[in-house]
Amino acid sequence: MCMVIFAPHNEECKSPFHLLFAIFAFATCGGYSGGLRLSVDCVNKTESNLSIDIAFAYPFRLHQVTFEVPTCEGKERQKLALIGDSSSSAEFFVTVAVFAFLYSLAATVVYIFFQNKYRENNRGPLIDFIVTVVFSFLWLVGSSAWAKGLSDVKVATDPKEVLLLMSACKQPSNKCMAVHSPVMSSLNTSVVFGFLNFILWAGNIWFVFKETGWHSSGQRYLSDPMEKHSSSYNQGGYNQDSYGSSSGYSQQASLGPSSDEFGQQPTGPTSFTNQI
Image 1: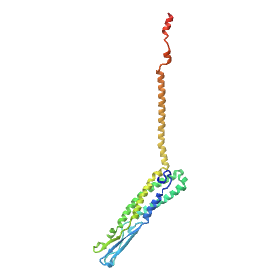
Image 2: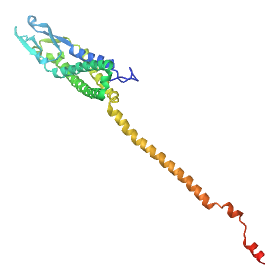
Image 3: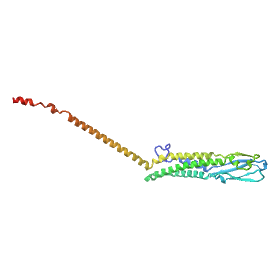
Image 4: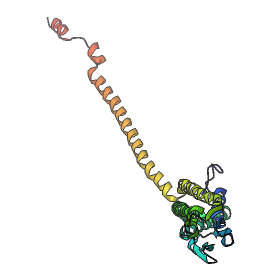
């Protein structure tokens, strides 16, 4: 698997972009941790809580993230939890990224140190081609699923949506507000790198295919009919030329008068004079 920008004449390399993009993809998603802070200002100030911290992290099982808020009705507290579970899409995305990184690393070692084994019986290029196609599909599916999962995480952790869960905030006399919202920049970056990985792997399918025996056999299949057609055309032209030259020669020999016919004198009158 090789990018032309690094080795235009050697397609047996492994682009460092495969390794770097995979690292950025699972690091920005799998290593995320964030949170938001809310405040509830009750009419009775002693019941207020101006710093309600809600923390969440990968794999984003938000329904398991619980927190307590004041009800502004005495000392009673309300226990709530965030809504949603995006763990399946997030874990699938990170799993694809990790395995893509491991395969890219292993393929780089094979390309460098085991080139003969790689080309033996054309098995290495075929395996590489199949794996590249599979990872291209997985990157597309994983990135699309994680993009949808991230959208759900953003909605579930939106401070305005969380405030709607609190009974105290439904009373106009109480003041509820968001102190700060979660920062999602790294998660947005993970989605971008996911689709970049798909483009990178899908773009290398052709270069890997050229290393397989399927490509070489296809070229031979296309070249054989062309060679047969050109050889038959040459034979037909040669026969036509030889036929034309021989027939022209025969026609000239048959139509042209011979030197004997022009040089021969009439013998009839001479013979008659002598008789007289």
